[in-house]
Amino acid sequence: MPITNIKILGSGCPNCKKLEANAKKACDELGIKAEFEKVQEYADIAGYGVMATPALVVGGKVVVSGRVPDVNEIKGILKG
Image (cartoon, rainbow, N blue to C red):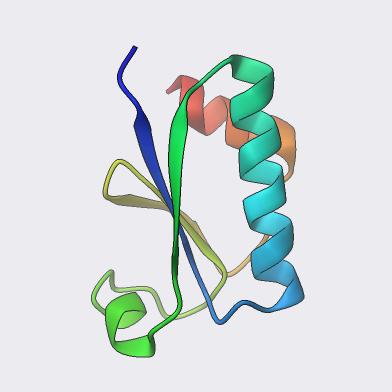
C-alpha cells in the first residue's frame, strides 16, 4: 500500500495540533501508512487557496479547512 501524504496547514495552534492528532489516530485505526507534514508559513498555506486554518490536505488536495473534523470524519475522507 502506498504511503499517503497528509499535510496540516496552520500556525501550530491548539486546533492545528488537535487536527494532526485526529488524523494520525484515523490513519492508525485504518492501518494507513501516512507521511505527515506541517505547513506553517502563511505564503505556503495561501498557495493552497486556504483562507481559514487549520486545514487538512490529503494527496495534495484540501479536504477540510477552518475547522477540526473528528476521527470518524477523517476516516471517511481517507477511505474515499
